[in-house]
Image (tube, rainbow, N blue to C red; front, side, top):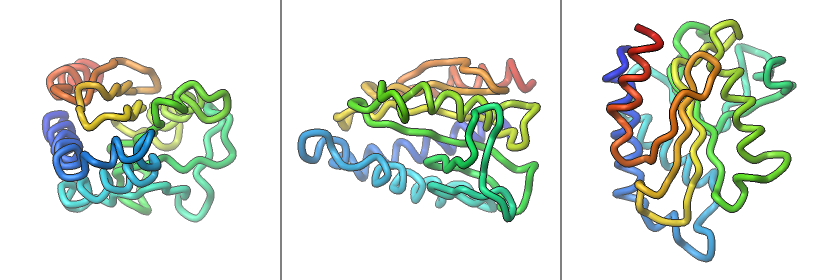
Length: 178
């Protein structure tokens, strides 16, 4: 799948989430649970990525737990992945998300997410996802206030909001993947 198509479909999923489920971001004091939000995103992405599986909290690689030495993890379950099950060559996208108030949590915050995304996108590791993202979920339905850190080839390469990110991510993917 080329960069334009991958990023365009991801954009479509995020746009649908913010259009149809905006209330999830500010229900109560801090909005709803991050798993609720990533599940809804997964539903929208599922309708866009024909021929691929969109899974939430997916913890398997074939018949074994998803693990990564580079990330120092015996078990991982990314919040959302787009892939083909039973294939090691069709891993398109992996997402880790964290609510703003938990972003700096010592055990499960951004530093932990970064390790996972480095391992999941690294070209010398098993998974080799084309694109990874760490999403800082803000308590607002305004996508321009949400931060996204993009990972390619085992490195954080870009930081954007979730509004108008497409051009920068496509350009970066093209530059790195050709």
